[in-house]
Image (cartoon, rainbow, N blue to C red; front, side):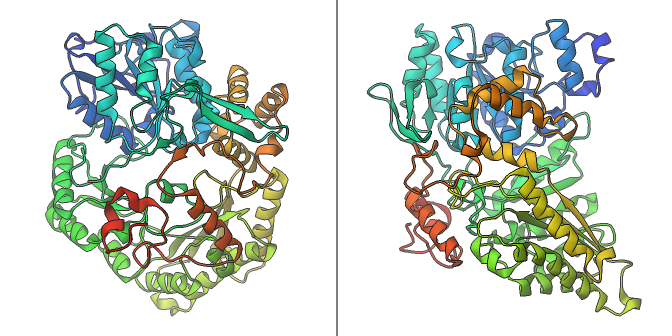
Length: 624
């Protein structure tokens, strides 16, 4: 019988003790004495967020299929338990075995959001692992980072032994086999890391040296020794249908953010929005076959008892057999009252018909993401969505019985003007007008339109990676313009407006495009109490301003400065398939307001065709 790491009196003191006890349905238990490699898989945020992450579910299942590996889970302790663990010197532990993390061979941390970076240090700190990778001895796990933020690993380079660049289904087995061999033959940590750098997609920061010019930009980035690759190649799963996928995901004891079965129907996106990092990182678009999706859906619902299934994709409407999978789910599980969640749909006649059959129209709201208010700016960002299509979709939805619409926009986009911001209010007004064109006796109550704006953050490996940002006061001024214009609309009572925090945006932008010098700022802020920065109630901007001042690092260098296209960027040593030349061409097209067709309409030669899979192989000659 397992012994819990926390005593009953501690569990009774903390909020939601089920976060820490493990033992959930479908969690994997093994004999620690009969496995060769122990892997702690970490999401650096609270349990409810981490348990909702599909990537960890996939890797957890994939690793535990190996008899020689036991993969367990660990999440950030909430602030109440964090305090107790420090006061009582309780080491951070894994949920399954309740063993201390420091006893593991690997600690894998998924990096999904920049504002979780101080939580990464919390995980290391509570585990008793030195924060700086250069200080770790043979008794420490190998700390490995992966996920979308790992595509610019440099702000965290001092804290990680290695980074996995690419999709987890590809070379993890090779890395684990190498580790087993090194462990068996007594090869020390440093030599293992050197050998690991030879595996495609593995980046070992300590084996590279960065120099800086007088203007603060990177002068050089190169391996410290021969045999270490100068360029790290992103690893791509080329056969999604045959790729590992969990048949029995862990079922949490408490309600989590995504409390449902998640069915990934495809990976990647054909659309090419110039602000979207995921759309570039996960190229080319690859689909899972309809038959495999049917099988996964049946098994996961049977093995979990969940009453809802969500189709996961960056753009579900672009899945080639969307009607097939939706009709299967509706027919197969109708008698079980399984709810079907359909995120990332384009609002067209088919989507509205399906949603009306699977949702309670009177309770649900429709989501549009125009991203920009004017057609000119939507062309700049290559959104591929016209005002006509938006209004037709809204009109069809209102006639179908919906009366609630959510609209998502960004402020601070490249080439954005005050007129573009005002157009957000005008578009919301036009949508409201569509509702009130319906005869009063045929309407479904009052119209509710919620306009939400976030502030644009330039991300690596996008055509906007060279763009400038603004000061917090500027961002708030942009939001004030939108707010004022909405109040001038005839239907202002039907329109509600929300906007994001400006100072959080600024820090996110610094972390997204920062270099190794930012590591010192993150460490300084953490040591002064920064934690759970993604949570409004614990966000403290002054703490970060002080950290930048202490470290003598100019925030404006990373934010308001527009990069030159010939500048060496901190992530240039990573090759994601999409070429820098293509991104530069798209940046130039954006400045001219030119639209680039999606991948199925025409190949744009982005470079992802080298992987010879997915949408790149659908038509002859579209090799990219």
